[in-house]
Length: 215
Image (tube, rainbow, N blue to C red):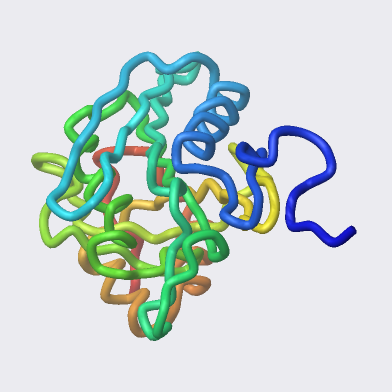
């Protein structure tokens, strides 16, 4: 006999189905992955923007080295959509959360991180490794950085697989850039700037570092 209902379980409550995991399910799984990798959060804040879902920022640390890590929560609840696409897919598409590591911590960065995490919802951008995100102002009050370079994920926090057909969540580190570094990156590319940082032994976690020599 032909039928459209699953053979087992409650046909009115499929575990995920073609619609994929819910926003709440994704956020719960993301937070669990962050806690597994970084430990229990030492603080959290939430920011809501007009026309966008709420974004939380979790603080972890400081650890034994004095490093404080900030992670967004909520950015990955929905996939990022190609702004040129005629219709956004509600399930498939890249998903990401953002990570920032600062020696000593700078809790004033929480709102800036929430702004960056809301960018895909508000501006229709796809945040991916190699991209620059510009705040138009200091990353935190008095910071020498007004933009960040999005780095490759998979190091500090491993990618999180979601039930199909949803794409996995990537945890992308943010590397603060001085205005001169950001301008250099626009001309010469992310790889060249990262090579300069590496060659000069730049501590990208130092909240007061100077810009790398670019001459």
